[in-house]
Each structure stands twice: as C-alpha cells, then as structure tokens.
Length: 91
Image (tube, rainbow, N blue to C red; front, side, top):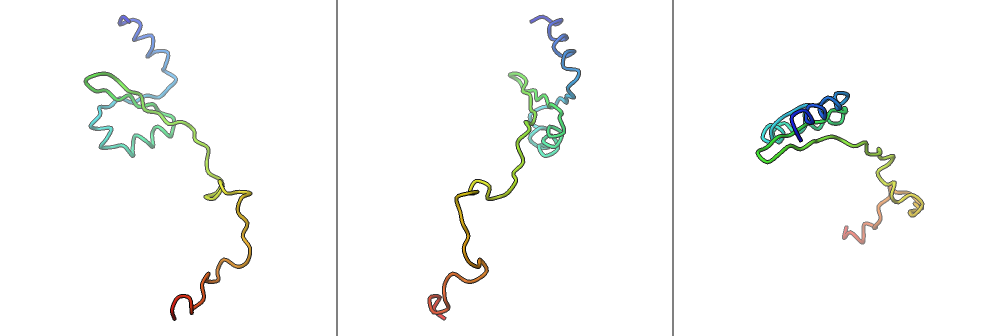
C-alpha cells in the first residue's frame, strides 16, 4: 500500500474515535484504556513490529449470578438453617 492508501484508510475511519499509544504505556495504564474502549473508542498500540487495535465488544450483561442453573436447581426448605446438627459438628 502506498502512502495515499494509508491516508484513505484513516480518513474512512474518522467516524471512530481513535487513540494511539505504545505497548509500555498501554500496559501501565490498562484500566484507563479499557474504560475508553468500553465507551466506544479504539486504541491503536504501536510496537517495533506493527500496530494492534484494541476495542471492546458488547458482551451481554448477566441477569443473575446463577443464571446457568435456571430450571435445573430446586430449593426446598429453609436455606438459613444449618445443614448439620450440633451433634454432627461435635458440640
């Protein structure tokens, strides 16, 4: 690709908000870059061998912590009572 082609690629991506950094800064300030990616920005990371793009994908939010067990587990009785008696614990 010539210089004109590279300029065209960047001008096509003007709709994306983009930030450039190096690997050292990216690793040191990862939480900040992760937050920016979640807001829709794309981070371009440059090193000696090339460039990498870091962006976030929209992952579905969990509805519940035990969602994978829905329909498989049935709770019977009181969950606040001890499962073993005092005798079984050795009291």
